[in-house]
Image (cartoon, rainbow, N blue to C red; front, side, top):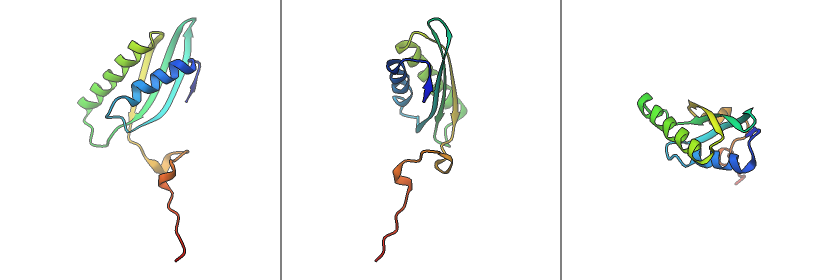
Length: 103
């Protein structure tokens, strides 16, 4: 996660995204200063493969509203939905590793 938002604002944005029960994973989050006190927020989220387009639109609207509510300086918010593919994750969680034991 990177950008020009403060640590506090980044935490609030991440809470808004991860607070949505339909989000499987926050894939990326970037923030950019677009004016003296305005932020552009770009988020990529993983959603379940079976999520309908109508549901995706609702999820994105819910997250955007929460970000605007908690981080008023976030003027432009762009959220890109995706399907999480663990094999493409540059930092997979430790549960994807299988250690074979010798019996």
